[in-house]
Image (cartoon, rainbow, N blue to C red; front, top):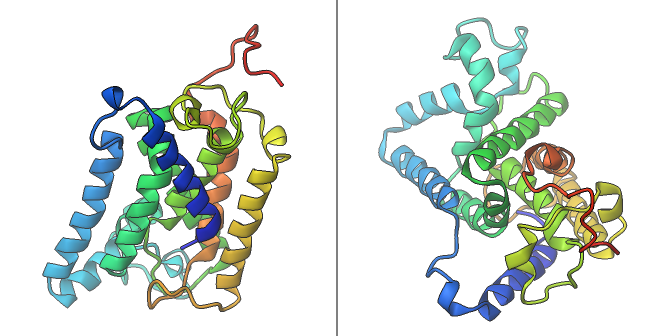
Length: 266
């Protein structure tokens, strides 16, 4: 979906940190329950859609996918799409629970496990769910601005996953007082106060990640094949979710810096 090389280094670092942690204190599956539940929901929805007839699946897409033309009365008259004014609101988030096929949902689920897990562990279940929905809505918003009146449905959790990637940058790539990918980084980073965004954006690791991430998404927009699904990659939604996760992170982050806390200065 995105910058595999940079993301791969991130995941390898997390796995390395887990491998060096004290096994007496590590669960068999070190994944927050909210991530497991969300992953099961995404796969279950895709399974249900695979079992129902094509006609019902089209109705599901019309009711829950994000369709920019829904908001343009010159394209669709009132009543053409189901859901009415309610769907004008809920489709900003429900589209994230629908996917093109099992490969699509599988890839998004794997990235959610990798990048959503540290964010969920830091935020807690309730905050994470709200964050997931918020970044999904932000992705839909930017998609709407760039595809106004388009009748093609947009589906997939990529915008919310992109938000998780951005949020993880705020404390995993540039955590104060920790060198890059020390074995104890992943375990401690979720509890350490995050650096200001202005400081993080001076970190070369963060800059490299962001540059590669944006370059790949823009390449998709210019026509590069995704190699993932047959449909067009909604790269604008990815960017909307990423920017929302990066900028709105402090609104969700429960970890606060004490005024006299100097332990992580430097």
